[in-house]
Length: 369
Ligand code: ATP
Image (cartoon, rainbow, N blue to C red; front, top):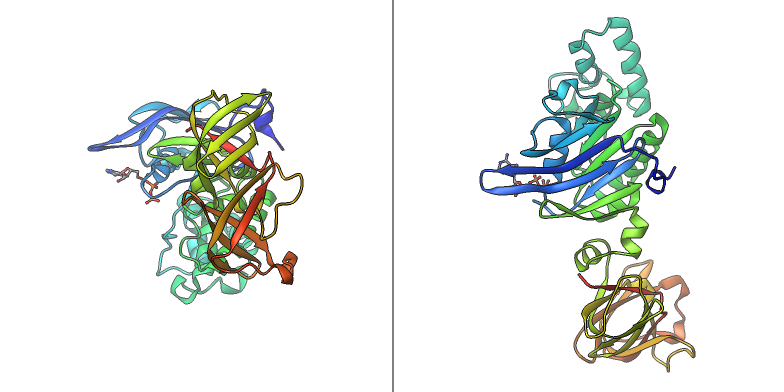
């Protein structure tokens, strides 16, 4: 499934130059975006960047100030929320406290006037789906946070919407349960063949679950791509820094030829492959992920394209990896992670030690923005 590489594929959901203005602010700023059928799509960004507003406009709780939103090619202008073939699940779950689990799940179906026997069958199916059958007669207050979240999910899915919108759905869960639930959500989305649009400020969550993600800032989209592309080929400092750990080394372009750039930084020369158009003299940042930086105390490995020297500033043991912060000669900090299982005992690197960092020509990216 790779619709974004298929030029003939039409998005199911289209935001077409959508702007949303509130009295004193622009929450969404001339934003265009396509989301495809069966896609697990994540809107990622810091608090206040407009991601919830975007989702609320899609659900019909807010109208765009200008621009259009289409579903299956049809404009949603003026279509009330309950007539849209989508459902929204809120962070607060919004469960009815006085109703049992099964009544909560049945609520929307009853309102739609579905026949009793059909409702019962659908509720059974939903409770089975989210593994809550044993709890069907309990009230929400008698359930754990994770169980409440699953009730909300069952209720959102009961009407069989085409699209499920999830606004920070896992925000109330602890880390372990969050991680479990992420995989459950992914399985469920696969099983039901639905389109999921999730809003989150947690980059790990977006990376784990999404087929594609949009990184947002101040009402605009900075980059839309599958998580691995966003991580490995960010197009701006902002995205590089927001998604995952990164070291940014300020530099000036010395020369460019045949997809290879030579950069000059205060701490040394960097040779790097590049796909962005650059010109000599331009100021850029060289961005590199910690796992791409090799650390050694001896002379650098023969053949390493790039070497920089520095001093060990911090060491953080994280169980699976150890994180080193290395201070380069000009004071720039560069992170390097070493997998503990692959760590050689004789190579225990200590605080304040002089070390060599080395990395390949394709280890990082040049960012002009
Ligand atoms: P969070 O993760 O904190 O929910 P967000 O990225 O979802 O943030 P939005 O809730 O979409 O951000 O808000 C975007 C901007 O629009 C913010 O500056 C917010 O204050 C503003 N805003 C949102 N709703 C309203 C409203 N009803 N009236 C006025 N301003 C609003």
